[in-house]
Amino acid sequence: MEFLYSFCVLGIFLLVGKILRANIRLFQVLFLPSAIIAGFLALGLGPYGAKLIPQWVIADWSPLPGVLINIVFATLFLGVAIPAVKKIWSAGGSQLCFGVVLGMGQYFFALLAAALIIVPVFKSNPLIACILEIGFSGGHGTAAGMKHMFADLGFPEGGDLALMSATVGIITAVVAGMVLINIAIRRDYCTYLSEKRGIPVYKKKGLIPEPQRFSIATATVASEAIEPLTFHFAIIALAVVVGWGFLSGLQTLSPAFNSFPLFPLAMIGGLIVQRFSMAFKVDHYFDKSTFDRILGFALDILVISAIATIKLDVFLANFWPFAIIMAVGIVWMVFCAVFLAPRMFRRYWFERGITEFGMQTGVTAIGLMLLRVVDPLYKTDTAKAFGFKQMIYEPFLGGGFITAFAPMLVVSLGIWLSIGVSLAVMAAFFLLSFFSGWVNFRPDKRARE
Image (cartoon, rainbow, N blue to C red; front, side, top):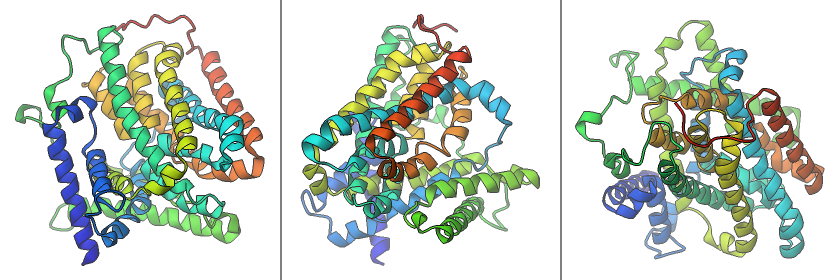
């Protein structure tokens, strides 16, 4: 019953966060998601603030992010028609190259800052550099899933710092993203959004009026046999169990995998389940919108519980190293969105760049939210390119295998060799983009249809 009470309290905080978003203009202008508003409210009322939330409630919330991230990742490829690699590359290759440069750049610049400043001056653990990509590109769930690995590698505070990094990242995504969008509107960088049209009020409040409302899912099975939502959750559960089987096998092969997180393998489990459903021609019973609703629910609970349970004492004890890492990450991401994007995309550079900016600092949902702001009807090819790019990108970065293995590699290779590896990968994908004819060193930033 204690857990039920704790979960219901979490729901009430989410409702309060939604009410605040709908009524406070500042939150509307910043486009802050309700889960973030609610998370900070709960944090302020918790043990590090007003102390109004009992410790047992916080204890019940703490495991949720690490559990729910497996649901989120298992859902990513379910209900998605997986095309041939050639089609993925032709439609999303430029987006993939841009994304890898951004993601590996987070490692490169954070490791460089750690090697030159943070480790020699503050005597910090070099693994602190990994919190940038884990928090920004990965998000709260990835950060929660990496807690055990950080602890096993002798950096127990890494998990909490990564959670704070994810919080800074998602705020950067929505706040800086909206600032960049407003500048782009005024400078005519957006193809289908002008200063005259502006951003609809209902998007700012988050309350959809009747004419704009839409169905959030489609029933593919009869509720007399099984509730459609239950059916889709069962498919997700199967994907998680497949991933769990892979993890158990890896742990049997080597004790080095004992601290390896489940979520990348849960994603592979989802991919396998989707492939089998296509092979047996039953994938038409999978409704992508229903999977998205389950993913969105898990993500909202994940974000609020992750923020509400951040250990502020760990954050304050590592404030300056953390602040340097965050500053480096934010500067790099803004540079990529403003300078690199128009040079790596020949068409729709702002739409493609701002979508990647949102994903690489926040989460995929934030990236798509920013895209919906600048391209509400998906008239550009950005959504398609981004979706294809994610199919290759997600298994490796942003919570994939590279993200999961990175701390182990930093420990085994050392910080300077890790810097060299990350720079080499960045250079390789930039050159790949260049030789594919996607790079333009003298772009015209003004929008062209």
